[in-house]
Length: 136
Image (cartoon, rainbow, N blue to C red; front, side, top):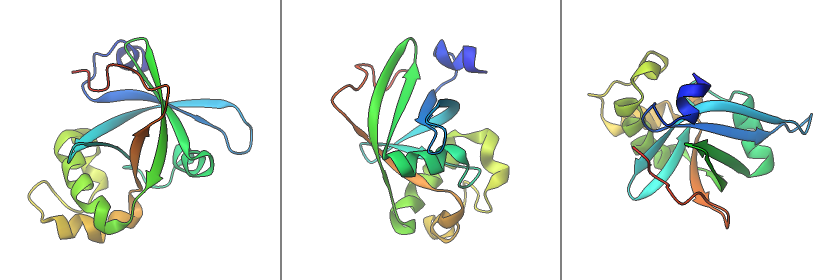
């Protein structure tokens, strides 16, 4: 999967790199980035997995795709702000739909209700952000 993501062949999918909060090692995972309301978002569809803990601890991540890498600060948002982002995420990240109780037809309030189980981070470009932010 990483080979296809790195080459930019999987839409909206990037390689997320975090620094291990205990080991200090660089860890990489494929993630789907969501564009919503003019901002970019990172969603943890499987709950607070290792990259979530690492992103929380460091406050920053790297995203890579098509040979380019960018640095981002991350801001975890509350359920009210996460709800519309989660709804959009379920619309675009079809493979993760079984991990949500809400469906594409559900109201935003249904996503707000389950937001605690799916951490959402706003991606804030740092000084060294990749120039092609929204490759399709």
